[in-house]
Image 1: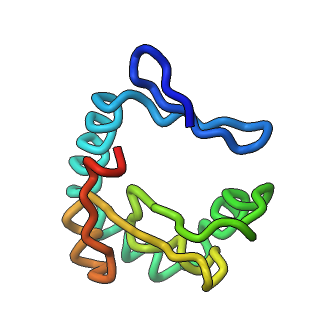
Image 2: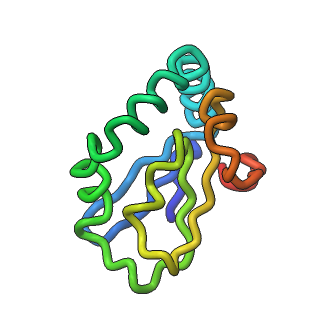
Amino acid sequence: MRTTDDDAQWTDLGDRSIFVGSRSEQVMSLDLYRDTFNHRGASYHRAMQKYPAARDREFQLLFADLDLSQVHTVIDIPAGGGYLRRYLPKEIELVEYDPSGDFFHASPQFSPLNLRRVL
């Protein structure tokens, strides 16, 4: 992981990099997400339960080009209703957190997580 002058963070994935953003951008993004899904999280979760394969291709592509053999832990923020688990090998620990109350209550298996440590 490298950090630039404005505290933006990049994660290198071979020939690809993922922009994580500055801490203020990350917090603002999580706040916007939380506010949005506090209003529609329950209906979104019901739809995902009714049609669990609706986002199969999206989740499969997330890991398609990655070598997961050396991965021990994946942190999923925001985790929604915990949909990522079924796309990861069982031996990979999945730590999930979602700031939306609807998702948190719909999926009590989420691990308590101190976001300041991660961000």
